[in-house]
Amino acid sequence: MNTPAKIKIAIIGGGPSALMLAARLDNIKFDVTIYEKNSAPGRKFLVAGDGGLNLTHSEPLEQFIKRYTPSSFFKPILHAFSNKDLQEWFNAIGIPTFTGTSKRIFPQKGIKPIEVLNAILKVLKDKNVNIQTGYNWRGEEMDADITVFALGGASWKITGSDGSWTSYFKNKGIEIIPFQASNCSYKINWPKNLLSLAAGLPLKNISLKSLNTRKEGEVVITEFGMEGSAIYALSPQIRQQLNEHGKAIVYIDLKPSLSSSALIELLKSKPSSTTMTKYLDNVLNLSKSQLALLKNLTTKEDFLTPENLAAKIKELPLEIIGSGPIDEAISTVGGISLSEIDTNFQLHKLPNQYVIGEMLDWDAPTGGYLLQGSFSMGYKLAEYLNKSTVVNP
Image (cartoon, rainbow, N blue to C red; front, side, top):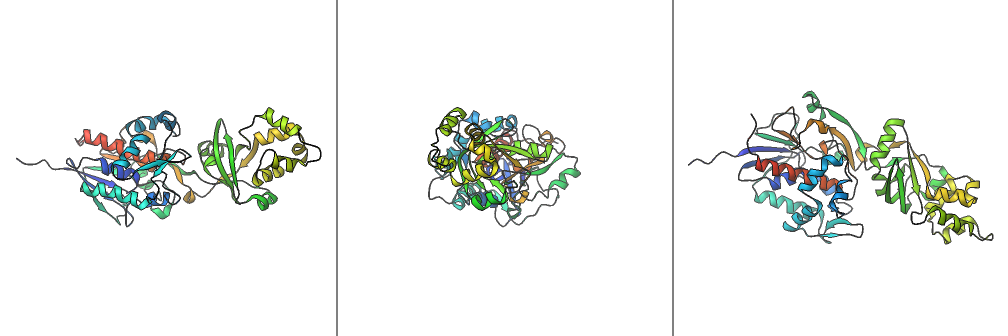
């Protein structure tokens, strides 16, 4: 009896979504080949691990889903393969994880990013997945029954994700949303004196608000403006304002643990023999960078008036006038419009061609959400293809 020929799947790109897809596809039914531009897959995956490979986050799934834009798109994807599922999968392939104090999830201490990647690649080798490196796809039709595109967004060009693929899809009549930086630095024209006092210093235990969204975390004052987890998480709100008005307002709360009324009472209690600066340092434990912000971004009258100073401590406005270069951004939004794919990532206009990962127009903050989103898309597509092996004519 003749064995049915395997269905050939070409995966173009070798990032997290592509690797998970290949790892989960049924190798009895499919003949899978990954086509990677670089000399080895997972280049951006390794770059992301330079400061510690943050695989995902441990918060409850329903709250986890809300971190994504649009969350409605990601809800079924993350229910199919959640943050808990990803932890269990890594543990099953020999990469135990731990949850840090920030609730972010990392490989167990001592496990290097390259070891994580090698564990994934071993899964692919055991499933006879073919990996062709040095393959720079330029729009040609692949020798495959099914083609999956996982070419990445437009940040970190050195890793190979340069967004150059957009012209191919535009020529096919597919809507492309222009790429924009996300999870990036933001430009603020600081007073020179502030920079001389605070450039390079962190602002810890603060919260930032933009539009109706508030995020807690940490940021760093830079010559360019500001960067760090708290402001990265507000990228959608800041980007909306920049697109609409050419500038964005972010409000910083330098003392989220205290209410305005409590602050006013404390400030009114300042002894006349103590300067306000010394009092803020000793009693409120404001850092050098926090004091520099207050003294340089408030009038002398406001600084010395308890009610006004309390208002500034709780809601100090910062004007953002631009974002950092797209190539220096951690991630991008834009790419193929979500309206161009069905619920299984297949392009409406190109049957048997699928798109996953950062090629699609979605957003998520740092903290493990970006990697989880990509892994989950790869997993969900694999599960769909495993159950639906008939290629459309």
